[in-house]
Image (cartoon, rainbow, N blue to C red; front, side, top):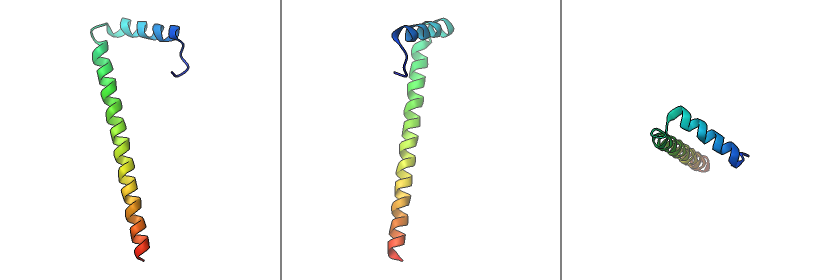
Length: 64
């Protein structure tokens, strides 16, 4: 995962615990997950809109 070793991940988690505290980490993780989900949803919607526009352009080109 991103070329990180278990020791490096442990150090990162420890630093996060020190910075945010154990009570805020679950909320932070949920927030990150929600943001990633919304970003992915937006990208998929953009791809769908682009595909629909390409199909519409192809139909117009066929009609001429």
